Image (cartoon, rainbow, N blue to C red; front, top):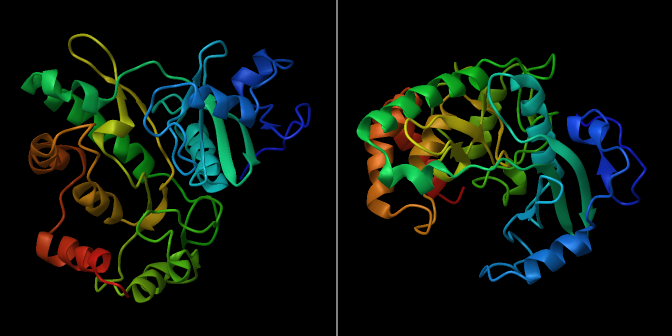
Length: 291
């Protein structure tokens, strides 16, 4: 799914079709070693984590670099696909370059200076919360109706790549992709999910939680961007609801009471609720079982 690489920078694959590279064709990007050094010099408790270190802001270039062993090319391809498809209607950081070094992937993207919804949640009025949820509902609908990037219907990551969802990425037999006349049935059989097969395949973000939603400052905030597309892909239509209902953020992002309130009272305003007994419970059984 990626555009041809620009070989001007050895080791770093730049995308010449991006606005940043068009405007800064000769600008050198910081190397993986430079990015690691910037993190090592910080006080973040996970600065030296090779798997999921904190992203590094390159303020002088207006970029953010997300990296680690868990950062895969699949995520980069997905974010580029979503940026192109939703540009002008849903703000997504633009990926400008990509590289791999010592087992870690590095995604260079535009930096969006805005707090997360989790950061602002406790200080919002009820009217502001409701307004943001209505806006998010419209945003989710925009990616839910995207057409697949293939003539064949499939369940998998963008470009018929294996899924990167946290629930399947450590199970090689559940990576997929599933391609065929009935990919939903194939997926259900592989995962032992007992649900009706007559379900459409739609795009899902796969991790729609408040820490992945950026909002504006001040009164009456609006959604500024949706970030972290690592788990995005093509799934059965219930996946977005079930994942958002199941997922928990670190308590450092939002306390447990606020997260429960989010799921109970606000998530249904964003994603149309599905049956607990007919959909969520069979899906939850899959997440809890070792098939």
